[in-house]
Image (cartoon, rainbow, N blue to C red; front, side, top):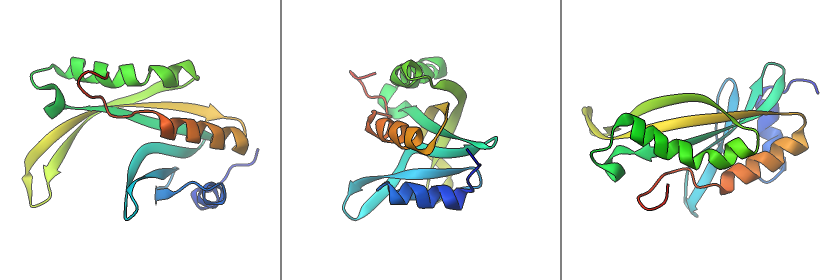
Length: 147
């Protein structure tokens, strides 16, 4: 399959009824509509990589939800959420610590997210759409009593 530019990929996703949050140089990030008038980053992206397509999903735990846990424990919660992705052929691509700053005072950190990203190459647009729809349905934020 010929490589798609991010703009061509965006058009494909929109034609399949998916909602786009933002377009970056190597991916199109899908939106999660939490209310009719509010969309947010879903943590799910369609990738244009190495001349092919792929899916990226980010799972996370928030430090404020697991007070007193070590960073490895917090990453562990995110990795447990990613087990379903691994069962579908996704592999861990990265793990990162993301500070969430106060919008009114960038020096103040409100919370910290421990994120683990999983990626999977796909062979064609129909597989891409199928995997994106599956990923959108997965819980991506760990919670007490959940993951």
